[in-house]
Image (cartoon, rainbow, N blue to C red):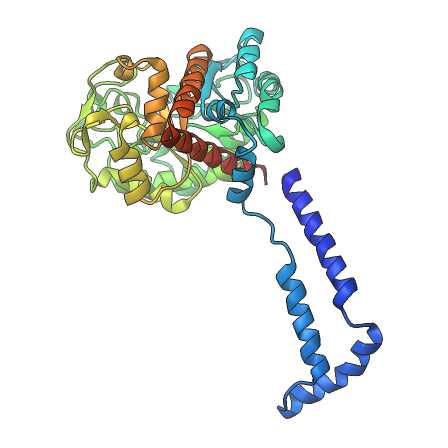
Amino acid sequence: MTTHVRQLMSLGMLAMLMLTSCSSPSSETSTQSSPKASSSSNNGSAPSATSSEDSTQSSSAAAQTPQAPTSREQAEELVDQLSVEQQAASLVMAGVPATGASSTELKAMEKQGITNVFLRGRSQLSVKKTAARTAIITKSLKSNVPDDLPVWVATDQEGGFVRVLQGTGFTNLPAAAQQGQWSSGKQATNIKKVGAELAEAGINVNLAPVADVVPAKVGTSNAPIGYFGRQYGNTAGEVSQAIGTVNDALNDAGVQPVVKHFPGLGRVTKNTDTSSGVTDTEIGADATDLEPFKQAISQGNSWVMISNARYTKIDAQNEASFSKKVITGLLRQKLGYQGVVISDDLCEAKQVAQVPVGQRAVKFVAAGGTVPLCVKSSPAITMAKALAKEANEEKKFADQVREAAVLILEAKLDQAD
């Protein structure tokens, strides 16, 4: 429970005590009126005037008792205390080496107001040493987050080839293709252990699980997922079952799961990180590939990461990360997802290289996104500045930045409880 909520609850209790001392009947009056009330209830006659008056006073006191604000209401109040520049910076997730950020990086991010980081690359540091490095990051950026809420420290700990943290104490988790062969019980146990390791290391967001469906006929010719065995199965049903288990296990361990890469990256042949022009011509708004994402949405405990590929059946003109039809139209409106939407990397990915780096964040948020992810801190700061500039010049975009900031603080409030 946050300090802000505790203060509000304390005020509510004080208000109740004041109302009780002013309006409650004395103990003598209560004793005298009790038999009358009992008699009335037994014989079915109308209640006495004293009983009715007590009831009215009690109802009035209850009506005036302040209700604890919702996470949404608290988030809105906190966001409205931030400048546009602070709101914009709160959206960006900046990448730093998994072995630790330099003092120069930390000072620059602190100055800009960055509150979310991503541990990139590979690290052979132990859980204990990783915790020490993440503690330095958290301490440096803590002042940028209002109300003592958490700094988000994220990484990629899927398993197999995509396992950033590999030092002593971190489970040597196999690729999802192998995990998909486990029973639900074994999978839950192992992933909960992985989540506990991440939490101990100071990491509260895992950019996993992969919800992409790679059909058997596509297999390893799917460069981003199938080639590395990152899929839990070859059918939407197999993937959906695993997604449900992994999301719950990570959540139970206190780590935020993130399903990716909406609306599905299992049918393309090229990798958006290393190639441009990556296009899917099969997935549409009613494709079965969306089922694992629907499963995650129904659970209500994971975020959604957007693919950088282009989907001709949904929006032939824009990459999914810049598409209002994909993020707002399909994900938010049709599928009903209202939580945090994070991008895939928008800094090093070849797929989006033709767009100036600052505008990549602007286009993502304008399409309905929440957290633009950049795997390097310097261009991430450029993104924060671009978001603030656009918000200061365009009222509609300023409203979108504010809404994204509210979603982030609402999620941090829920995580802190």
